[in-house]
Length: 98
Image (tube, rainbow, N blue to C red; front, side):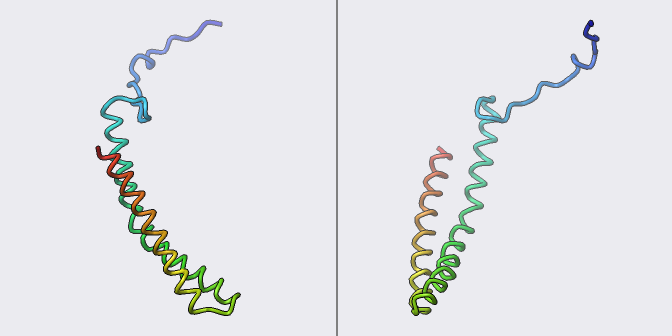
């Protein structure tokens, strides 16, 4: 069987590689998208940690008989975790911008 000769094969545009091995321009676009994505995540991380800590601490506090203390401890631990994650994300952002 012979392969049919399509004239449309010659008219196709080359596909742009958006991965890590792509051109300099595609790497720059990928880097910018990554920076924006990391920056968008920051406010959610800062809010989610204390909320999750408050809810989790309240749940554990109820089981142990220290509802208020559990909520307070959970809130503080959640806030500390959020600060830690925020610092890590900012370090990644600064590394990506360089």
